[in-house]
Image 1 (tube, rainbow, N blue to C red):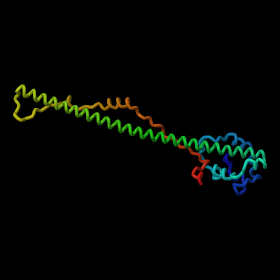
Image 2 (image 1 turned 120 degrees about the horizontal axis):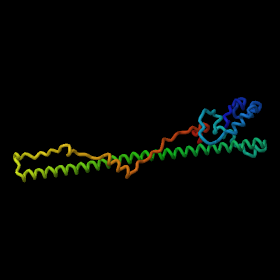
Image 3 (image 1 turned 30 degrees about the vertical axis):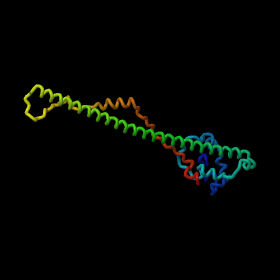
Image 4 (image 1 turned 180 degrees about the vertical axis):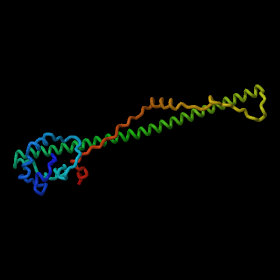
Length: 214
């Protein structure tokens, strides 16, 4: 079953009971090639019959000891040991890769959160710097207006009484803030956070994990 042989090619009606007159036909070069090419590592997507899954295989040999099989047949005992060892390797590989993917997912999620937090801090600091620069610009503008008012009064220019002095700001007096320069300085000081690529899911359809605790 590990090698994707169908039950009807091994059994009569019950997939739990081997029917040798049928199964012996499967003992050929093709089956040996399947044994030789099989590896318990890596993703194994595909459609598996219930009896071809690890869950069924383990349950099917539950309670059978190596000694019992060895007393029956030394050759069969070696196949039995090989099957159990392969199942354990396969389960360990699936569990290890699943744990690795979960770890990478967590790292990516943390990187995304940290990147969003950095972006918020970046924007907040830019706004604070911009507001600070705007206040300084307003103070400087008021200072220039006051100086011009004082100069007008001192030079006794003809100015209607009570009418405030108008300050023509012009384009040179427009407020400007170098956002590009700020972002460049911030990015050099606080490096952008690299977000790992999205974790690609792997299909291990030969082991139904939803049944392992049942």
